[in-house]
Length: 337
Image 1: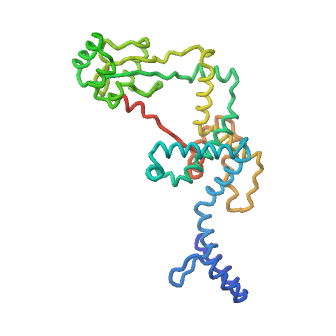
Image 2: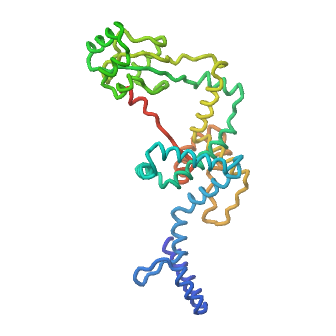
Image 3: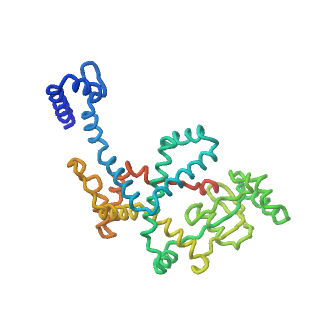
């Protein structure tokens, strides 16, 4: 198929040259032929057909998605300005453009300009998806009851033996500051910070550690060492994660609910599919007719069926969604190890 396309392109170019004036022929030779290998010539048409065969659908999908997003947000210029501001801050925090460029290259995120564009598209995606989220009282209550998990906070001292842990507890009970004992004894990377861990939620820590944090009142220190696969922990609970009444934390719960929907790729794809359908996109190239059809189909499926299609859609969308998504992972579990 590819060889046939190349032959057709070469023949068309030859016919054009054959019937062109000498001046036109000179222009074609300069502008239309982009590479030569001995007697072999690669024309712009050859190049286009090859690129279209390999990347046509994903490239067109990306261009259409970006255009639809720009038409759907309230102020695309504001999103671009926000992206530029965010990247400028990251450049400053990383130590300058040279260092930041190296970080981007290490993570295969392209140039600073390309990364800025990715943030820009990501911000637009967040805006259009967020406004479709059902934030009614009923929806928030359901999320609070079934999915909301408060964050927990703790300090800990990790040692090898139970005897060492008991000695640490004795020192703390005797009046020494938890932070100071942690800095001196703890084998964990959090020792330099007084054993303070980043906030975490259910399932992020080993079970023994998490249960000990939940079992204590805020401010308490374990009086019995907590054994895990990593050693023995002395734990000071700062926030045991007990659920506050919804009325007291509704704003926090609502924000977390919206974030959970943004993280749900199936939900995002469905929203985008509906946008594409309402935008009445017309694709004139027969070879690229199906570039966005899977997203539109997903938007029209019942929720149960759409969920089963998510894996397939993710695979076909990943090539273009690199510019639509950005993720940051908080390694809190590693801190506790």
